[in-house]
Amino acid sequence: QVHLVQSGAEVKKTGASVKVSCRGSGYDFSWFGIAWVRQAPGQGLEWMGWISAYDGQTNYAQRFQDRVTMTTDTSTNTAVMELRSLRSDDTAVYYCARALRPISGRYRSADFWGQGTLVTVSS
Amino acid sequence: SYVLTQPPSESVAPGQTARITCGGDNVGSKSVNWFQQKPGQAPLLIVYDDVNRPSGIPERFSGSNSGNTATLAISRVEAGDEADYYCQVWDRKSDLWVFGGGTKLTLL
Image (cartoon, rainbow over all chains, first blue to last red; front, side):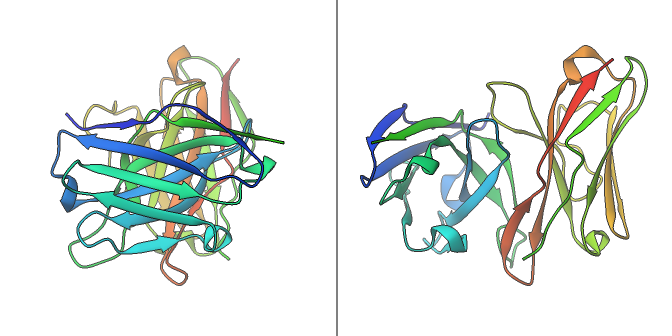
């Protein structure tokens, strides 16, 4: 069965960076993408971007374009999302999810999700 | 940018049918996915590409999409269906994913 297991909770200072990892199992990791979605306390879901585990192609939401980097390592079936220049409003639960696409198209949705990683940013 | 609009809350009596809407400009031309999220849990995909259910999702959950509104219907609602529900689409024009604001389903 498909599983995505994320790294543990983080507490960071304003201006610092955070890396959240996501290890996939139970499927061919390189055939899918990984999307990152965050959820601020009491708020809705916000898409941050995706990365193709096949070729490393990325697509970031504009508001994170200059602060986020997504990578994958197919030797360990692990995806990592790094968010830099943290602000207090980056406090959220960060989810990874297996991203899906048609044979010749862009990633459009996600099916299996990780358990979430709480990132707390304070001064 | 593309916007999906959901009612913040819906209430339904146990055993009845709940309908949660997701409005967007010509959303009927897009494929809509629906996620269920219970407190403290990750989202769960319950409907994809407007009308399809992943393996293990009960037939009580169904989707439709036409014009400017997509709808998630939950028949014979039970206590375990209380959750937040989110619709999501891929906007081809911008190549971005868009989530609705979410609807909290409460049983009366």
